[in-house]
Structures are given as C-alpha cells and as structure tokens.
Length: 385
Image (cartoon, rainbow, N blue to C red; front, side, top):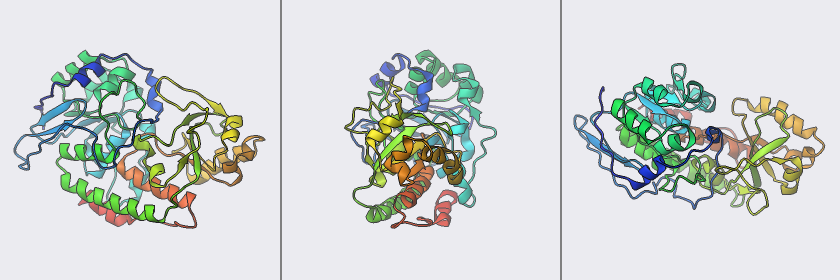
C-alpha cells in the first residue's frame, strides 16, 4: 500500500480537542480513571462504521474523536503511541506494521515469548519520546495510519491542529482514542473499553474474524476466573514508585474504568484509596504519599508500578525486601503478609491483559488458582491462524 484515501467526519469534539490547551508531556507516564464504567467489549460511541468484505474495495472505519476514515487498502505501516494499541496489532497478526511506540521501555513484550509463533521486533520501532514527539518525527515514519488519538498529541505534546492536518495530508490519517485513563479534562468525547477499541483496530486491518476468536477466548477466560475468584477481593492500593528503594509514591484509583485497570476489576480487587483523603493521580495532579499515609490506608494488597522490567524474584529482592526492612512500611498489612506486587503496565493491551490477570489471580488467590490459567497453544493459534 502506498498513498491512502481517507475521509474524516466533521467532528466538533475533534476540533475543540485539537485547539485545547497543552498539558505537561510527563503526563504520559500517569493514568487514572474516575468516569462511569463502560461495558467491556463495547465501544461507548455513537458513531457507526461500514466495512466492505471485498478486499479489493475501499472500506471505512469510524472511531471517536476523528470519525469516519476510508481506506483503499490495509495499512502496512502504522504509527502508534500507547503500546496497548501495538499489543492489539500483534494480537491481530499485524505486529510487523507497528512503526513506533511512545516509549519502548513501556512496551512490555514478554508475554509473546510464551506464545509459539508470536513475536514482534522492536529494534526498528521509533521511540517517539526519545526522538521527540513532533511533526518531523512522525513525518519521517511515512505511516499509512497514525493509530493515535490526535487530541493526545495536541494536549500532551507541543503539537497543534496544523501539525495533525499536515501529517494527514503528507502521510496518513489519524484514528484512535485515548483509552488507558479517563481523567483528562480535554477528553470530553466518548471513551472505548479495551475490547471496544480492539474491535475498531480489527476493522482497520480487516481481521474481524480473528478479533472475534480472540474476544471469545477472552470472554471464556474472564468468566471462568470470575467464577472462582471471591466476590469481594482484597483492599488494594495501586501506586507508582519506580525506585528499588521507594519512599514516596504517586497513588492511583483502582475503581475507575481506564483500560489499564481491567485486570483489577476482573478479579474484584477493591480500592483502598477511594473514599479517603488521598488525592489520586489525575490530569494536572501529581500528588505523592509516603509510608505513613500508606500505613493509615493499610491496604491488604499493594501494587507498585514502575517495575515491569523485573522478574518476580528481582522485585521481591529489591522493592519488597526494602519495605520489609523499613520501620514504617513493615507495619503495613500488605507488607506484613507478603502481598506486595508489581502493578502491571500503564498501557495495557489484550494479550498483556490475559497474562496480567493470570499473574494477579495466582498471586492474590493462591488457594483458588495455580499454574497456567489459559492454554498458550490455543491462544497462539488464534493469533497466528
């Protein structure tokens, strides 16, 4: 595929978002959610879509906030920012199309190692934050599609509506929705659940049947785990603390509906920070708490983000060991009980979600779950069929 044909709908939400004020680029490292729940597997959007089955014909996909985009062929080169969308493309058998991610360090590809025939080469992917999120960097990718919410670029980085229009004219269209968190004040249009967005990506790359097979695998797995998990899970606190010896943390809410919270919801983990005086991370807020505050909250399980590059043993030998020997931290119930865990990726996709849910289930409920909770060969077959 070379040049792309695309048609954007006239979306007032898009225009307003593109002209909104900018936030700090560092906000890309946070996530939180306070919006009302969306049904997992459904897009909370009113826009319809039309996909033509004949591969030789053009087809359209509609996704808020951009609207309708018409393709004359399946995109072969796709620019991505949040790695959750890259994970979706891998799940659909199109990992080779991913030309970029926001930060390679936050694209955790370990789960693919357990799936025969599933892999992705990140060596040639452009790290957008490292190269600079700009018109020039994105133009150099010559992408057939920018699978990025344009409002994310214009509100978090030093880009504007003119940059987006320039890239659409010189390279490829934009399509995407910021789904990993739900606290951005500029995101005043419909959100999608993880699987709602996943279905849209499947329409883009003409892999609806593969998506449906993957969704069926997911639904069966989540239903089975949900039947065996307790109706009321532990009171959990989710925080960010990237040091091996952390003494301060950025707190999140578990009770929100950002895509990265899905595993906690699937396992009925309760939010120890909700209904407290602690101000969780949100747009424009980077509050921090210490061990005294965590002791007051006294969570039964503590999830610490910023350590996905560590093995379980490495995490326990550094972060957990430090907490166990800390005068205040050692008195927190989660630390006393050895219930301190890596908190999972900030940007979560469907393959990563399955492995993370299994990891949390076997850690939180060892009397109910052990070993592998889903068939790796069956999942690999869905992805590679």
